[in-house]
Length: 269
Ligand SMILES: Cc1cc2nc3c(=O)[nH]c(=O)nc-3n(C[C@H](O)[C@H](O)[C@H](O)COP(=O)(O)O)c2cc1C
Image (spheres, rainbow, N blue to C red):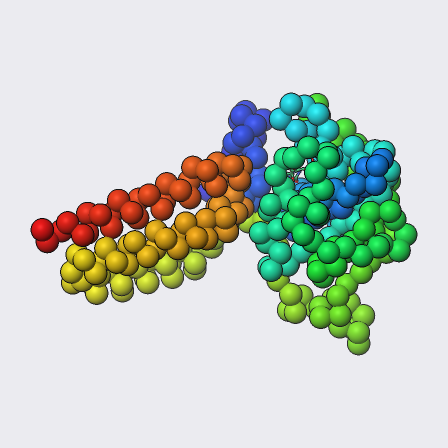
C-alpha cells in the first residue's frame, strides 16, 4: 500500500495524488454574466452535489497573477449561475472553454455554442448540454489565500428528454456519457493495449521498410490532424495545462513518428 503524508508534500504533488484518488469527478460547466451582460463559460472539476438542501459546491482557484477568475467575479457581482453537466460530444468545447482569456471574451460566442434563456436566473443555459441547473450563490467559504469554496442553491433543474425517464421521474445514466475527470486508465485498458501491441508486432516485424514508412507517416499526419483532441485528452489524463500538451507534448509525438518513418524508409538502402 502506498501511503503519503500530504502535509509534508509540495502543493503540486498533493494535487496529483489526491486528484488521482478522488475519482471520477463530474465537471461543472458554468455560465455566469458580468455587469455588462456578457456571458462567461468555464469548467470546474473540484465539484460536488449536496442533496439535502439542493446545493452544489465548487472550489475556485485564482488566476496565475492572483486575480479572481471571471466566474468568481461574476458570481460575486451578480450571484447567479447555471451549472451544466456535459457529455461526450462536447468534450473539446468544454476543454477549450477552460483557457484563460480576458473578461471581454465570451467563451460561449468564441466556441459558437447556442444558448437558451434560463427560467429564474440571468445567465443563459447551453442549448446542447443535457443537464443544466439554475443556481443562486448561497455563500463563499475562503479555504486559503488562493482557494474559495462556492456554495450554490439549486433553483431549477433541466434535463434533456433523451436522458430523462419520465416513468421513474429521474435521469437514466445509461442514456448519456457524462464527462468526468480521471487520473488514469484502468488496468484492463492498459492490458488490452499491451495484448494488441504484441499481436501486431509479429506482422509488423515482417513488413518491409517502405511499407512501415507509409504507416508511420500516416500516423504522424493523423496525430497532427487530431492534435487538438489529443491535447485535450492528454490534459484531462495527466492534469497538465492545455498549452503544454498542445504546444509541446503532442507536436513532439508527431515529430517522433516522422523521424521513425524517415528511418524506416532508409532501412533497406
Ligand atoms: C476539465 C477542467 C477542470 C477544471 N477544474 C477547475 C477547478 O476545479 N477549479 C478551478 O479553479 N479551475 C479549474 N479549471 C480551470 C478553469 O476552468 C480556468 O481557470 C478557466 O480559465 C476559468 O475561467 P474564467 O476566468 O472564465 O472563470 C479546470 C479546467 C478544466 C479544463
